[in-house]
Image 1 (tube, rainbow, N blue to C red):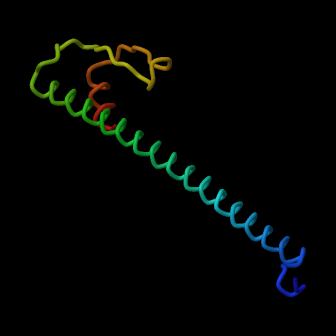
Image 2 (image 1 turned 120 degrees about the horizontal axis):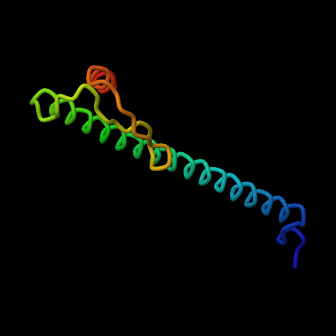
Image 3 (image 1 turned 180 degrees about the vertical axis):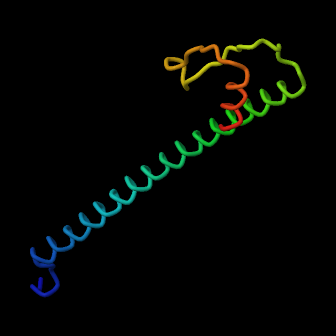
Length: 103
């Protein structure tokens, strides 16, 4: 065998380094893509939650306008998001309507 036909050790190591760098770059790209996908899915879920809350508020204000809600001077309302952070408060009707309209 001729020495010129066999790859030298240096050429072989250089090829391995290129492959290793390419794999490393590919993995970095996949990690970045996965992080962005997770962020997109989280933002999409937040949009769904905000839309749900907006619809609840719209329904509530409609019920006030139609007179479907008792004319008590104070009404109960839940404040907070999530099961662990919600609490009930009793507010004057006027303040409650103002809060819902502002949201």
